[in-house]
Length: 440
Image (cartoon, rainbow, N blue to C red; front, side, top):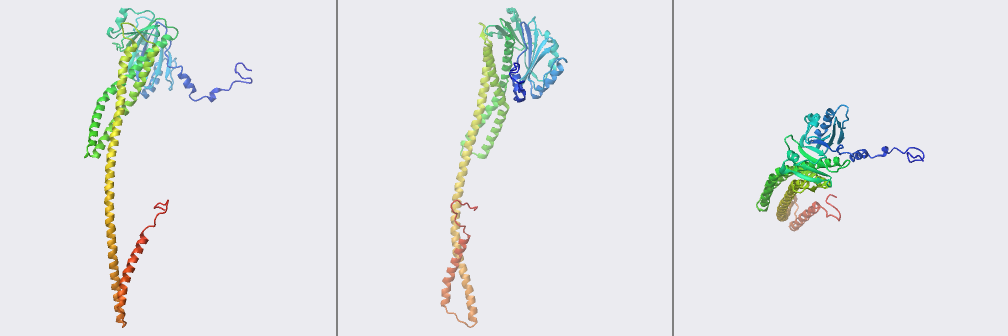
């Protein structure tokens, strides 16, 4: 047996020929979305850009222009890319609606000094999209002094937490500072291997997802007054439906207008509300994985996140429920109006059928009368014709007895009557047999 191939008579078959089209891409997906290696001490900056589909494609072209000519560049289908840009580690990550650009500088000095990143300052002017979040991260082995913390963070908003089972401590105030960055200070208290990179990545993902999740709150707040107005209009319409003399056409037109306006709100906000819920769940997952522990006397990271994110999430959920409730109420009101219109239409049809029945009875009686008059009229003309024939015969010298006239009168009347009945039988359609339809 061949030890290198596991077969006795040749190389193992090429499995790539039988591979699923997505096998390679799914395998790559399991190894991407990770920050470059960070070893304490280090500093990093990250930009988070909101982009649309076109801007996401343009970002790849922009990177090709900004990266050094001897450096690799991302392909059009890539969603993650990492390389070295001079002395800096660099990673680019594309999400569904935002892109992150991360730069890592080794060594430590002033924790939030941006001079190590001077070579990439010009990048911001060439990257497509709008900055929604930008952060400075400092990873240090020495615990910062109170003076250092006070110099870089707002005391009233300071949050201190132990994470990673106490192997690191973080300081943050979640403020946007004068240079346009937020700040995050991480004290390495025993992190090993890739734990530092993984910790920073989770902290950044928590901040990024929290920011995107909060985008749903302004939309819900902006649409809430419009929704309240629609609810009041629907209440008025429902009251009008209950009025006996309400104009059904006018009510239906108002309901149609309400439905159209509600559909516009749903179309405009549904994705954002769903995204808020999804990103909030990701935030809570990252908090659990960070294993946050509170430091006495200070707010913790999980408390800060939940204190603001949970109300925003519940506001968006309540807004979504109001949309569903209003949609259901409009459907109920429309059904009630349709029932009323159908009832009125059935009543009209009933009255129309009763009127048609009466009219048919009158027509039948009139028809019988006309038939009787027709028998008399036809018999009268037939007898008149007989008298002319009789006069012509008598003028020739023949004499007809009077009993012939007496016998012809009932005979003609009977003949006319039977003739009209036969005509009616011919015009009347034959009765339908079982299973037949009028079309047979």
